[in-house]
Image (tube, rainbow, N blue to C red; front, side):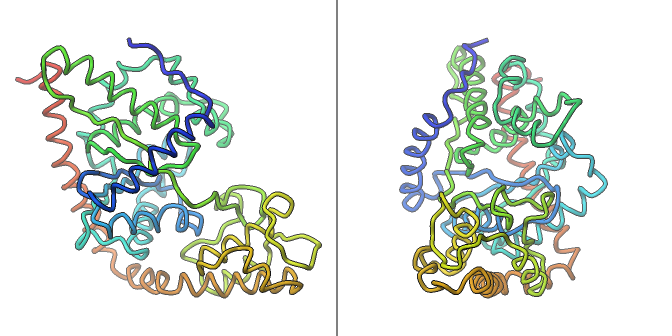
Length: 366
């Protein structure tokens, strides 16, 4: 075993990742085919506006730039900390509807959407990858610790500890070299990079063969973390502080009316001292492109009522085309199934080729 992974100060590693991300972003516009992006979601429920502004819009942007993009629906990973396995199939199809409605188009873009339970070649990498990491490295992963705590798990199954290794399989089976992530996901990506490096050094270098796996880099989100309508926690359906993409305009208005503000009637943009008001201003800004401070100045002493009314109008206007397309796609379940099956078939083609290279390096060809 190589030297163990040292989970460095997240702030220091973030600064370095931010600089690398900036350089990748510049190169993506010039050389989109040089990269393969791996991104995705766990099918635990409907997507909300935090997902839309935080990741969906960026996926559409990358796909429109011509960047080859793999969108993984991580259905197996739902089993690590959720008991909602009875809804995995339904949630998977709803994710695809959200993706397509947001502007992802596998027929016109270099995009593959697939559930990883349908790509056995990806999961076959799990055993060799597990031999490249130690129990100590798995148990020390700060992201895993945080997820265990947030899920309130008392009896932690082994799948939770090996989740970062499974994520490495997801990224490396298709030789993904760019992964859009937030700051909190950097430790997972650090483990993927380590696994790729250890595999290449152990199984490829001594035989004079070319490395099989790239060491993927983070593409860090430019969108700030979007808080829920309570203004104090990350937006989440389970916390009841989210606006779902599938919500009607009336439902959206009712939810925003309940959003938390403060007692000061004069609206100002002050994220430190007025986080609830600042969060609502940021949401308006994401819809309209106007600076939050300029929106605050325009509302002035209109108070929380005008702030919420402005957000309601902006959000419903922004999401109207998506919601109309979503309603249309809901009526075509066979097309949604076709997108998934076609995507799984294409992902398997990639996985079969990678697995053949892996077997060759490990002297397992027969």
